[in-house]
Amino acid sequence: MATDQPSGSDDPAQHHDRSAEQSHQHTSDHGNRPGQARAPAETRSRAEYAADARGAGWGDQTSRSGSQPPGRPGDAPARPDSGTGRGSSHRTVESDQRDKPSAHRPEQPGDRGQDRGPAETRSREAYGAEMHAHGWDSQRIGEGEQRSGKPSSHSQEQPGDRGATQHGTTGDVGRAEQADRPGAERAPQRDYPSGASPGPAAESGLTSPQNETHPQDRGTNEGTDGPDGHESRADAEESDGHDGAGDPSGIHSRDEPGISAETVASRDDAASSAADPGGFPERDTARPGDEPADLRRDLAGPAAQGDGDRDSAERVTVEGKVIEVTHNRADGIWIEGLPGEMPHRIGDVLASPHEDKRARGDRFFRKAVENADDLLDSAEKNINLGHDALQRPPTHTEIPVSVPSSGHEVPHHEIDAESVATAGLTVGVLCWAAGEWISRKMRGLDDAGHR
Amino acid sequence: MPVTDEQVAALRAYLADDLDQHRQLYARLDRAARSGYTALLAAAFFEAVNRRFAQEGTAADVIEFVADVRGRSEALGEAIDPRAAERLIRAALTDEDIDDLDDKAKGGLYVVLLAGLIGDEQLSDDGLDELLAEARKVADEWLR
Image (cartoon, rainbow over all chains, first blue to last red; front, side, top):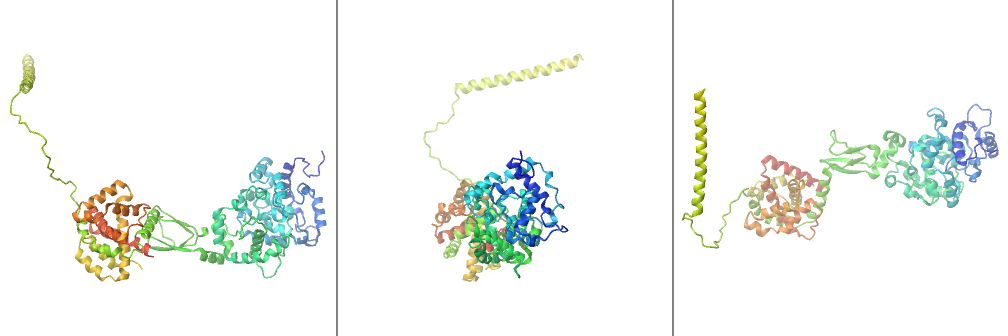
């Protein structure tokens, strides 16, 4: 049966998987590899790009879900008017990386074919099972999109696609490749930024983005926006006019002078949050614990650490020493009672078994001592009783107890028959025992004499 | 304001059954220092109760202890409300609510019950110093 799929397969699911793998294979074939006799990507029109893609044998794969390519949910079609090539896309990718776990790190030019094996090393069944496990079922994607009715650029947007979606340069290739990456499979969907759609399940209303986002992440993010947290909020408001409400395409220029990569990333995230009514209003920037501490520290930079910590830091006293607790997991965790020097500054302090006593002490102080003005006066009045209380009573106390006599006591002076019988029987037994003993002795002497 | 050495010395004199010295040292404390002394007294009571009952103590043990202290003298028997005393001890161990106990009752019970606990422990001078050091630490955390 003839198909228009390059794989020749009629099975949509297989094609879905296959396309992702193929896109990984052919990533470098779409106008971005240096040395090709081809005009730069910036100069190519949409039609030219489409022709190139078709020429590569996988240009018509998006027919099933309209503009949605089958690479994976959240992929948006390439933006023809933002085709600035890989240069600007790369910049976006880098900036997005700063706020995302490494598992979601979008494609880097140097990644391709260097740090990982080809997609074909995995079996089709394994890949399909993993994609299903993540809820990236092609059928559900289509349903979710129909129900949500959102523009595809936002409704299906994934964190790793953000830069590509808004720039439209990496397009299908980059997205399919990201879906194919092992790192993307490892990452749980709830780790996506709140503004971004976590997946088709959420899009279809089966799971809300709030439920997908870990509450701890949410709380931490609110407190540890870091240096660009303020920027991002301001930019979110600024960007609402571009992405959220005004510009359905979700495209804005990356080449604005004076805007750092962090700013651009912040704006992207905030804009996505604003665009998604189900998302959180604040951007989900820092996800402590999703990255190694040193990595995140490097990504955030010293200024980020400083600002974020100052906002949420508190001081606790442990064993008489004040510790600054930043509530930033990157600063590490210290457990009370551990051997070694007590830190001056730490991300969090875990309670030791003594914490229970301390908490009880605090409660006791609040309810028994605090605001008790008359307490000490009464205490001093009763200080004389302290002497009696301090005297420890003897452990064994003999207290004479007078027992009233309830009847007439009869003195036992007479010898009754029972006593005589008992005494006689006792004497008889004793005599018999003595006779036995004597006879044994005598027999023993006789035996010794015979020998 | 942290607990001072004078406050500790005043309480130590009381628990060492040297009431004359206690009165002298207590008289030197100004009003602000006496608030710290209150915290120290309560902290010492909290620490002593935890040492006595936190590990293996039961409600019956608390009742028995209060009855024992009340039986040490006629004055103590009259001065100590057994239910209030038991609740105050349980408040240091659990979430027992003692809001209905007035300050006067609590103040009197602190000194008497603390003396009873220390008397039962038969602490040496070092043991008493150790207990007061721990109480001072607790009081400092409360007052911080």
